[in-house]
Length: 615
Image (cartoon, rainbow, N blue to C red; front, side, top):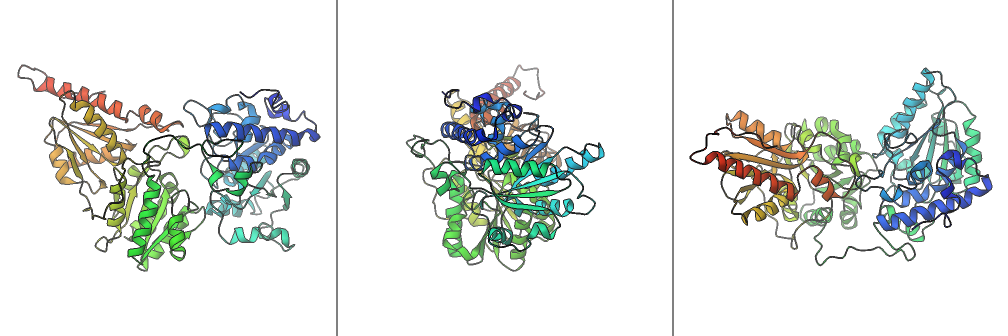
C-alpha cells in the first residue's frame, strides 16, 4: 500500500497546476518519487516500464514549464506516458492501468482533458500537433503551444518525414509547434537506419543536421534527465514563435539498473520483484509454446532448407521472434525500422526477383500498409508471405492494438490466400506450405498473441492443400464452422455438450479465402450453421460463409459469433473473449440453445417450421 509518507511531493499533486506550485529545486525529488511510484506499480501489475522510466524528467519539465491542458502534449505511441497520467489526476487510478474497466495504457481523449490526442501506434504525433496548430491559428489562438513528443524510433516511419516536410514548409513555419525528440537509441529493439546512425554522432560534431537542413530551428542535444535544465530550455522555447525542435538524449529504463542494462526485455517485462529485478514467472505445470516462437523457430528450419527465404520485420525482431532468424541468417533478415509501408513494398521487390519473403507484421500494424498490400503485392500477384502476429484480441494493450480487422480487410483482395491456424502445429504446416514452389501468389497467415495449446508442435512438415479444412467432429443438426484459434473454444464447448448427449459437427476451416467448398456443402446439410471467429463480424469470416450460401442458392440459417461493431477495451484476454461472447462458455450456451430450438422444430407434433434467429 503506497502512502503519502513514501511520496510526500507526488501525493500532493492532483493536477499539473499543483506541480507548478513547487519550487524548481524540488523537482529532482519529485522525479525520484514518480519513478519509484511507476516501478512499484508496474512490478505488481505489469505494463510498459522502460519507456516511461526514461521520460520522467521530461514529463515533469513539460507540465511544469507549459500551461497544460491549454498547451497540449501529444505523446507519440504513448508507451512513455505513464508519468503523464500520474501527474494529471490519475494517480489513484494507476493501479487499474491496462485492466478491464481501468485506465488505458495509452493516451485516450475520452479519459482526460490532458490526453489531447489518442495514440497507440507510432509516428502520428507531429501530424496531429501540426493539425492542431493550424486549427489554433485559424481560431486566432496564437499562444497555445502544441508539443509533439516523439522518440527517435518513431522518426523512422514515413509518416514522421511527411509531417516534418509539411511542418517545415514556409507557409507552416509560423505555427506554434514544438517538436521534442526523446532520443534513447531504441524503440523495443535497438533502432536501425541512417537517421539513427547520424543522430548518434550529432553531439560529437557541430555540422548542420537533418532538421536544420529543413530550416527547422534546432536546440540540443540536452540532457533529458536534468529536469532543471529541461525546464529552463522549454520555458525559453515557449516564448519563441513558430516551429522549433528540442532534441533530448535519455536512457530507456532510467533508474532501474536491470531495465537500463537490458532495455529490450524491460520494455514490458511483466511482474517482477522491484528489489531484486527477478521476473515472476507464472506457476503452471505445462506452458505451451508462444505462437511467435513457433513462427521464429519454424522460419529458421525453413530457411535452412530454402535459400530463397528472407525475413522482414518493421522493428519487431524480438516481438515477433524473428531475432531467431537474425541470429542464424543475419544477411537474410531485414529489420527496416518502424516502417510498415516500406516493409511490404521492400518485400514485394524481393519477391519480384525470385526471393521468398516472410513479412511479419502485427495484425494491428498491417493496417498501416494496406495500400502497399493491395497495389504492390496483390495487384502484381507477387509471392509475399504475410505473417500476421497478434491477430484477434490482444489483452491489456486494448483498442489500439486489437488485431480484429484483418480478415475483413484482406479477404476482399484478389490473388491473396488468407489462412488461420487453430494451433501451433497447424501454424507450422501453413508456414511450410506457403513457401512451396507450386504456390505462386501472396499468402497471409494470421495467428494470435500468447501461448498455444499443444505440448508437441514440432511435427514433420506437412503440406496443407490450399482451401481445405478439417472435419474435427461429425454430429447432427448443427454445424460449427470456426476459423483460427477460437476453434479450441468450440472443441471445449463440444466436449461439455457431449456430456448432455448433444453432438454437433465441427469443421476447422483453416482458410478464409478460398473457402473449403466441400465442407461448406457438408455444413449445408445441417439444420443450422454457427460461425465462430475472432475478427469483426462486419465483413468477416461469417460474412464470407453467408455470401457462399447465398451464391449457392442455399437457405440454411447461419448464426455468427465474432467481434461486434465496436472497439474492444483493454483487459485480460479472457474478459475480452467473454465480452464478445466467443469464449467456451458463451459458445456452449449458444449451441445448447440452438440444439433445443432445432429439436423442438423437428418433433413430429411441432407446428413451428420456421427457424428464428437465436439471440
